[in-house]
Image 1 (tube, rainbow, N blue to C red):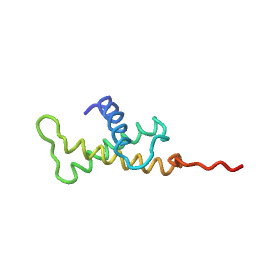
Image 2: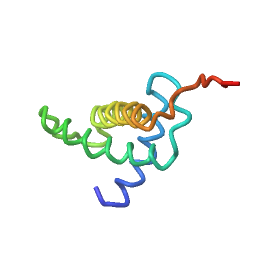
Image 3: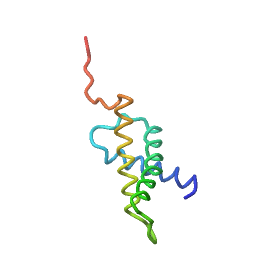
Length: 93
């Protein structure tokens, strides 16, 4: 896949990963979600190939599902590390 294809897939997979990630991840910045999506595509495809995935004719749905799940894990990690996932902030008076 070309670099532009990975970037476009990363944007889509990042948003899908954010959708499937558990908890409230709405406060994660868009650029970080896209980075998680790109990393999810690259790492997910590597994991897929490491476990014997060799692709198929047409759309290989297993490879895409692995990429979405890896992206969701990256979104959760990014949200936890940046500390922007707390939905209930207390106001101290």
